[in-house]
Image 1 (cartoon, one colour):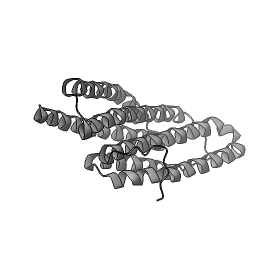
Image 2 (cartoon, one colour; image 1 turned 45 degrees about the vertical axis):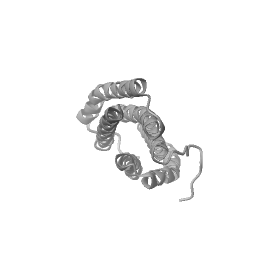
Image 3 (cartoon, rainbow, N blue to C red; image 1 turned 180 degrees about the vertical axis):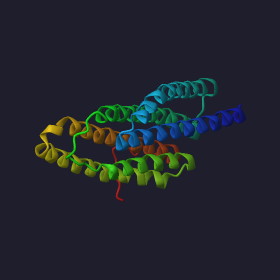
Image 4 (tube, rainbow, N blue to C red; image 1 turned 90 degrees about the vertical axis):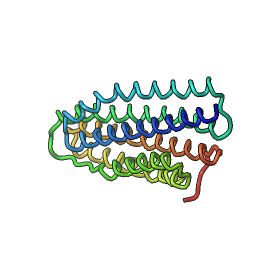
Length: 220
């Protein structure tokens, strides 16, 4: 029974890692679609989302099946609980990637020159946070997961700075308000993705260390 449980857990680990890779790629495409105003790429993101949603459902069913059939305890139980939560956060990140792709379709039709907002640094920080939390999951690397938690404040500060800049641009270019509002919403989607990446990092810490660090403040 124990050997069979370990095989099931290894399959589950591979599954959640593959799912994370799928979501990471879809987010990358969503960001590229809005940066390049690539309508075809935005639509590709929307198409992949149905597959990602089904993957999330199947993974949850696998977790519940293992819990029902094997009644795991201790480390194995922590792992499965963490995977259930990570699975949900990945699905939410996928939803935010879809939201960005939808904003991309909207922005592609707004071609007025003038206002310029560079949110590429924010995109890089958010993508790095997601990549790092997934790496921490692959390697069961708690220190790396702690680093992801510590990066969240910097992302929040950058989002706030962009909000201030966007408000200034609206005043300077009122004819482009619709376009700037879409960019503001993209920043909000990116901020939420970073929050979900932080949640995943916290679940990795729980998985490895057995401690619940949610709501705790850490010193970088």
